[in-house]
Image (cartoon, rainbow, N blue to C red):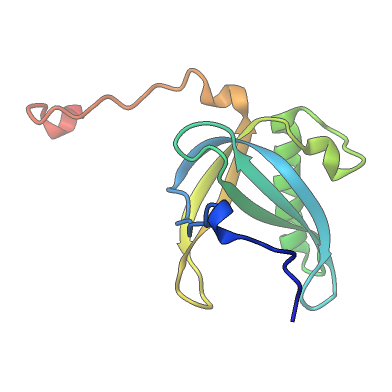
Length: 152
């Protein structure tokens, strides 16, 4: 048993289940980070929590794991390349601690993929860019049904 100190559910809005973010590019910031050991205990990964800063998904969170210390050289190389992309996107080239990357806006590219363990759809961060990269990108023109397909 656990004492709930007079908790009253009538005074608190219930949490609703969140569906994964739609695939796309989001202005976000790292709002939490932590080094954790790998499942096998033979390395460590940097877990990053990103919070979306604007749009319909403002306030939503997505996570990424960078296996920056791993026995597989390719895994480690990919993770360190991703960390380099994050550092460049937020203009912090030599962070001494991951907290130096917090609360700095950047654009993340989010994909949706099916989880192997339970078949549910989950988000995966697949890219990082400076927030300026999102500005000035041409918007896709709406498709006019009278426009021939080769001109769309």
